[in-house]
Every structure is written in structure tokens, then in C-alpha cells.
Amino acid sequence: MLALTDVRVNYGSVRALKSISLEVREGEIVTLIGANGAGKTTTLKAISGLARPASGRIVFDSVDITRMRPASIVNLGISQVPEGRRVFPRMTVLENLEMGAFRRRDRQRVREDLDTVFGYFPILKERLSQPAGTLSGGEQQMLAIGRGLMARPRLLLLDEPSLGLAPMLVEQIFDIIKRIHDEGVTILLVEQNAFLALETASRAYVLETGEIALQGAARDLMQDEHVKRAYLG
Ligand code: ATP
Image (tube, rainbow, N blue to C red; front, side, top):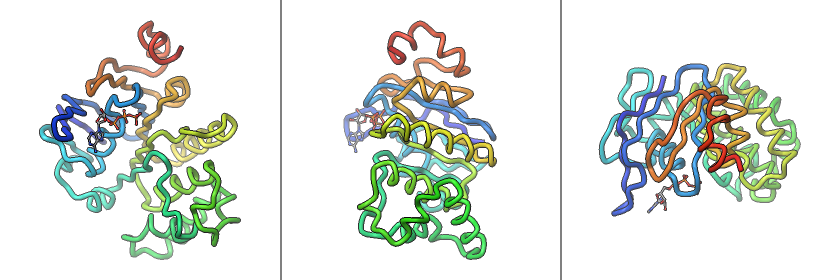
């Protein structure tokens, strides 16, 4: 479904991605783990068109998206849920969700998708006209995921959905991620919580200073000595 081949991204003189190759197959949950600054977010940004690769190729469903605009990439079926929630704080919950679907013309299906989002996150329905900035951290994370779903993606890019959340909420969010996956959405998950990530995904890549250090089945990586020492404590 998605393939990155030798992708390099620089920020000025910072070589954030040195030569990344990875793939996500339809129906998978793939995770990208690594320390702070390893290049996880940059990898997602390269896929969604927010960071421009200096070289390499990104192909989605046989279409070369390496230099496509972010809006066109969303239209092809890739939706990114950014780190740190990034909801529009002054807009209401409903307006935030509608923003996720603003390019769509199929209003009837948009309404159905709103109901789907409320099915996953009933609390959002209760908070519909509340400014998003006044939601709790967990609710903002739910809203960010809900907004991502409103684009009706086939591939959902999730950037650190557990960040800053209490353990019980993390569990709840991850249960919902699994349900979204069960409904047929392929997922590329960036997580600092390596244990949780490896438990959720079928395959994983370990990023270290802009390069892929290890890759394999999540359950194998969980047993890997280096992964255990560096990421699982
Ligand atoms: P974290 O888990 O802390 O979010 P990450 O693995 O997602 O880390 P990235 O955000 O992809 O890491 O950053 C990779 C490297 O690129 C880091 O060294 C970072 O400082 C650098 N970087 C990221 N964005 C920029 C930018 N806009 N300008 C300059 N350097 C940047």
C-alpha cells in the first residue's frame, strides 16, 4: 500500500532522515519506534507531504506522492493525526470535526462518518459546541483522531497518541485504535511507548538518528536484546 525508498529529509544542515526505506501493507498496523529526535515525526510528515524529501521516493497505491501537495495526499486516502493533539482551540468540537472533512462533497456520508466518530468517542458528542481548547488532554486526543477519521482515510498516520495521557486513557485510546483498524483502516503508528506500540502492531521499525536500525515482526522485536535494553527498560 505504502512504500518509502531511500527517503532523505534535511532541515537546513540537520539530516533528519538519512535513507529510510519502509513499507506498510494493506490491513497492517505498523509501528515506528525510537528515541526523541530519531526522525519518527519527520517520517510521517514526509508521507503526508508536510516535509519535502531531498531524495528518495514515496509511493502510495502505485501513485508517486513524493512531491505531491498535502491536500492531494489527503484526497488519496492518507490522513495524519499530529503529535500534541493540535486541535483548533477556538473552534468547537463540531467545527474541528468538520474541518477534517472540508474537502469532501459527499455530505450524507460525512454525516454518517460523524456518527461513526461519536460511536468511538461518545464524549465528543456531549461536547459538540464546546471550544476544543477547553477539552481535557485525553478529549483533545480523541478529537484529533476523530478529525483524522473525518477524511475517511484508508491509511491513518498516528503520531504519539499516548503522549501525556494517564495510563487508563492510554488504554482506552489504544482500544479504539484497534477498533478503527478492525473496521478496515491501515495504520502507521509512531510511539515513544515501545511496549505499547509493539503490543499493538504486527510489524515494527526501530529508528535511530535518522536511520532504520532494526525491523521485523513486533513480537520478535519485543524479544530482541537491543530493543529490550534501549526501549523496553
Ligand atoms: P520526538 O519523539 O521527540 O518527537 P522524532 O523521532 O519524532 O522525535 P523528529 O521530530 O522527526 O524526531 O526530528 C528529527 C530531527 O530533526 C531532530 O534532530 C529534530 O531536532 C530535527 N528537526 C525536526 N523538525 C525540524 C525543523 N523544523 N527544523 C530543524 N530541525 C528539525
